[in-house]
Length: 253
Ligand code: 4FL
Image (cartoon, rainbow, N blue to C red; front, side, top):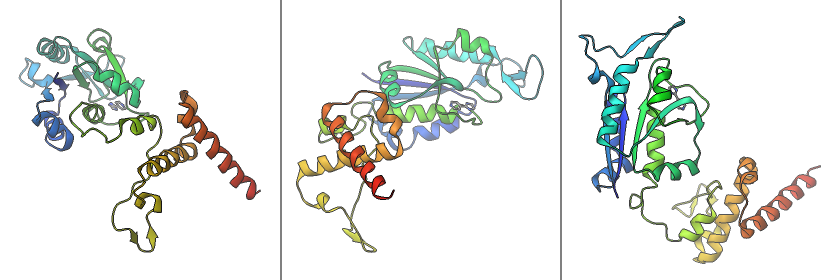
């Protein structure tokens, strides 16, 4: 079943550029995704096509008005009756990889990208289904966060990326950082490729990659390992590498 994304944005050309490159282009060309934009400015009625106004309570910065945004969301919902409407903002829930797979279960998604100081809270409360953040930083608008989220989703749509040779080996790596990658030449500036990768021994290669993924995760992002429970195979590698690392530390003390 095809996926449909609509982005509500004051800068549709920004999002349309994204739709024309890489996997987004591939997904739309293959008919696996329909990607559209709606501009709240096209839902205004005054000569100036106003979409923003001053903030109640005062202070600098403008707020996106209810009416044009609500009319745009209403049209998006009319075209995509099953849509889940997502507002991107730093106040939203922090997005992680597992959320992407869950969000993709809904084939119709609408992304609301705010500009200025944000959107009127009554739109957040009454017109939006969920509020997501891509990280704890403030950008100049929600377009890049919407594109970050769409990019993460598009590569999960079946048929967009070629299926991995071993889905089982791949699934073991879930929740781990990636292993190191190498390509030709075999030696460059005296730096060789790890010999196991040239061995042709696919089982040895799979084991080495899993071990290196666990090693990197332990060193760089131990918080990722503390989270979920791990299959016994991974738990064993974690214990082995933890011991290996603590022994190295002991050697230096
Ligand atoms: C949205 C930042 C989601 C991080 C400004 C407007 C933002 C954002 N995640 N910054 N929207």
